[in-house]
Image (cartoon, rainbow, N blue to C red):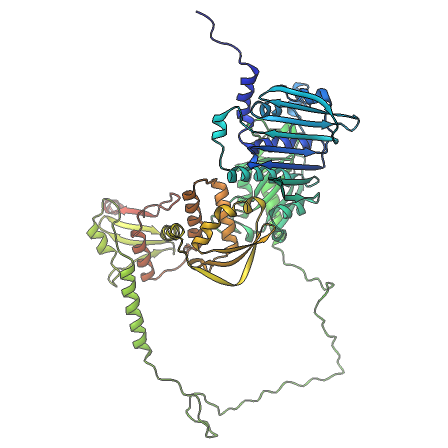
Length: 613
């Protein structure tokens, strides 16, 4: 029998490695820009076409490469930063030229133009599917110019499973923003289909965050800064009132590299917990500087998960630093009398005398008398039977409620007739509210407990979703339009969501530069902050990565329902509780919220009886 184990050819091995490094065009963007940063560039241009399917091009003014280095960079296991085993544990860069380039060249067509400052001529290299096509000398500027064309051209199955252009463009913007936020000393430009859509000049860290997130965010930033022998932590956290439903503005960076870290996130959340409502998330941009030997960046192919040697002490330092920053923010602000426009306080002059103001009052005036002492006729109140008017109003209200909210069944093991009897809105049925959060009522099988907030979310979700699908949402015009500043990734979602936003009642007009005016809002959410709501809806869509229209509509409907629903700790009358229950059981799915949370819990009769034995 012949041998069956053999070595794979380099072309196949590179394609397997590419599956770990190159998942989508955004992966190529990340690797190429990180290479440019390590090359010492202070100006980087990113150019894409067709959301990176056709072209991903990165141009930098870094140190460039020699002809030999340019060719070696595309060989497997070639690198400029590792020479001994010890170098693996002392990495200060993110990947200078080597390592990722062989994987990228295995699934795309690459053209590289590069020149060092000391060289008169540069080098041109063309590689497709790991095969070298051209290498020659050319005239080109100092730095490197990488063009990655037709990604996955030789792997049709991988190209087929790329997401729609809107999703891939959003992923590229997300990776671009992460790199931009941690390198404020570098100028970045972003071109999409030959149009410059973003330009970030070199600036301070605070200004870079404001440029990326929006100028209105400048007032929401609280700086943090601590330097210990274990770790240095700098950056900013958002004020408690800027907290959002989504986690879109939560960034951790370690030694210039973006990372996800749920454990450290918990430290920040715990510091904010007494200051923000339940279910909302704080915003933060936190930068760690630590000895590379104390972390491991290679536990995940994309290097977004990092293992720390001393996680618990760093957790305590981070938590204490954030709490200290929030404590300073809550201090009473001082008054600066040197500012322009201060109030001019007059100087007391004891030589001047002041008279007390005199008030003239007619002691005989009585507005309830038909005539005044002077003989003139006073005001006479109109005679109206207010009690009769109120009784008529209550009767019409009760009739309309009984017609609007039909009653349907509850659990499968509860008879429909019993449910109808228990859901009657007559005065004989009493509903109890426990801690202004749960509605309690009696049914045949025992006691039924209903979460009032979740029940209302379920009711409003079905209503909003129906309005979106039927495009019959009622818009209420705002007296003064509100301006909303979006980040580039949020703004890229607006064309994808605008039809559904308008269908539910929003009226947005584009002001340019990622700014929109909110001219109208859905009538059901008139008491909700529309700016925060739109941020939450866009952030939820970005987090869920929805591509199907129906899923996006459900995401919008759920965000609006959570914002407009009655809150816990809100006291309800007996009629209000009856209306909620009636509307809840008129919905097709009343046991759970759209995101799977339990609405109803049943305390069965036999369980209650066992409590008293």
